[in-house]
Amino acid sequence: MELVERQGAGQGSRIAQLGGDAVTLAGATSHGEPLGKAQQESGDQLPDAPGAELSLTYVGMIGVSTAEDATLAILQGGAHEANRNARPLHLFTLHPRVAFIRNAAVEASAMLRASPGDGITAELEEAYLILGDGRDHPQLKLGRFFAEVGRFNPEHFEDSHFVDKPVIHTRLFGPEQLSNGGIRILWPFSGTYRLFYGVQSARGETASSFLFEPGEEVGGHGLIARRSRGLRERLHWVRGETEGTLSEGSRVVSGLTALWGPNASGMTTTTSIIEADVELRRTPGPGPLGGLTSFRLEALGRRYEAGDPGNADRETLRDWGLVVQGVWRLERTLAAGMRLEYADGRNGKTPDPERSRRMRATASLTRFLGRYVGLRVQYNRDWPTGLQGAENSFWLQLKLTTERVDAAYAH
Image (tube, rainbow, N blue to C red; front, side, top):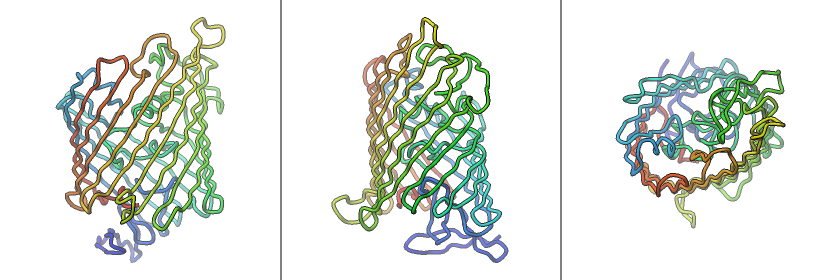
C-alpha cells in the first residue's frame, strides 16, 4: 500500500493506493475532499470503490475546578470526560472501515481509556455492517451503533468541538451515549428529506432511560431485572430530517426524533423521549457571520413511568433540556466555541442532583498546531441546584490524530 499526499480545493487529503485503485484513507470522500466523522451527514458516507480506511486518535485531558471531586463527578457525567481535579485522562480510539463493494462496508470504533487510580478499560463503541449510499438510495445499518438521535448523540467524542457532552444528553442517554445492537433503515426522499427507523436493544448502561442495570435508581426508584418479551422489549426510534440551502456555502439541517421503549422500574413501565434540533452549517468567509462554521440548537424531553399500576410509589418523571452552541473559525489555525445549556427534572421519590436544575455556560478555544495536532482550552461555569454554589472549571485537551485535526471546522 502506497500512501501519498494530494492537494485539492485548498485542502489536503491522504489517499491510499491499493491494487492500482485509489480509495479513501482517514476520511476522504470520493470527490477527493477530506471528510472526518464529524463532518458526515446523518447516514454514513461510503466510498465508491473497495478499499480500507483506518484512523487513530489520542485525546489527553486534565483540569482543575472549584468543585470537590465528588461534585465534579456529577458535573462531568460523561464516561469520556475528565472529572477529577488534576487527574489526567487518556483516550485512544481506533476507527477502521473496510469496503468490500461499492456502498457496502464494515465499520467499527474501539476505545481504550486510562486514568491514574481508575486503571485501564477498553470498550467497543460501534461495530456494524452498512449497505446503501443513503443519499439517492435507501441505507441499512446492522450491528452495534450510536442511535442517530439529534446532532450530538451520533457524534464521536474525539470529533466534538468541546471536551464534554451536553448535560441533558448525559442524563437521558447515560455516560456512554445511546448505542446498542440493532438495525436502522434510512430512506431518502428527493435528496432533501430523510426518514430513519431504528430498533435496538434497550438493555444496559448505554440505554439508561430504558432497561438500565438492575440495582440502579432513577428518580429514587430502584430498577429491577425485567424479563424480555421479544420485539416489545426493544428500543424503537424514528427520525425525520430535512436539509435546505440558505445561500452559497450555507445550509440548514433540521430534524425531529421520537424514541420509545420499556424501562426497568417495573414490569409494564415505559419511557418516551422527544428530540428536536436545527443546525446551520457554513463555510467560513467574509460577511456578517464572519468565521461562523456552525450554529446548533437541540431540545429534548423525557416521560419516564416509574412503578407499575397499583404501586403506591408510582409516578411519572419528566426531564427536559436545551443546548445552544456556536463554533467560529477565527483564523487558519484558531477556532472558538460557545455553548449554553439548561436541564431540569420534575417529580421523584427523593432529591437527585443528577436530575435537578442545571445551567452551564462554556467557552472553548482550539489551536491547530499542525495538520494532525490540536490543543484546546475550555472554561465551564456551572450553576447546579442542590449542590453548593456555582462552580468554575478549566480544562486542557491535547488531540493527536491521523485525520485532519480541523476537519470538524471545515463545513
